[in-house]
Image: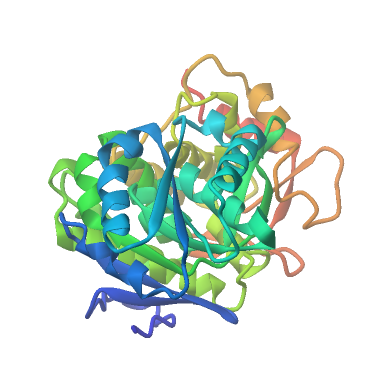
Length: 388
């Protein structure tokens, strides 16, 4: 196992020496296996688990067609029962109705306390599979096999599992520790460009808020269509290290780990208000630009630091302005139901946001990195990000 405790922020070095990480958040830990394998041999860690009777693969329609048949066949070849449950693609299906249908199907297939749920796909499938594993028999085993860049370097490196409500994103959820994560860079070959951009937006977030020493590398990154295995190894390593830096003593992301939500409060609102017209990472990118503008209005970030947000996001091909049939009030109405409500005492007319005091340093107020920002300042910051 690699020792990935945070190193000095003076210089970032990639220290992948084998294909296995130990992800440790407080008292919780799980292995993360990383490979680039076109065969199904990368599944071997699954078969080291003991006393599994049934594997249930949860995936969307796209992944169900691309990868689920081969993976299910490989599992069955190793003398396990394996079933594939497929859901419709899209964030709009990350809800209680979908979860209920999957739970009932799993029970019809006679899952037991010895069964294992596999989340195969991006964040949608990973979150729903995670909640299934929490709820069945009050908790059964969970394995993540992420197939999107966002999932590989961000969403599966967490204990959080959540689905959406009509009132907001990720409002219904629980914590679950996976048995393992098995990540395969080979999956990225079939990933659309927009999904690569989405994952890179999270990397930009990490660079701006946690590991600014990686910004030079991102500025030198080549064209997205020509990213190499070494590039992906570096980016995944960056994502893992950033999370371990702020979550080693905060496994539930309620204190220092909240910085991982930089850009997400407004990003989630944009994503939900646009109803799937923009993907998660791109919405977070717009959320970061908005947060930077708000921090500038409050007298913290300089114009150059705001410009750096846009420079990095432009470099990876992310949108820099909010477009579509969307009004500021559409975003504000969602912001008022953000899932971070309750960390701070409710302030009428204020939105709780994660802001930066400077690049690499979250703004802290009274021991919290959430700041209560007057709604009129939030609106002014958003106005700067709307396309004229």
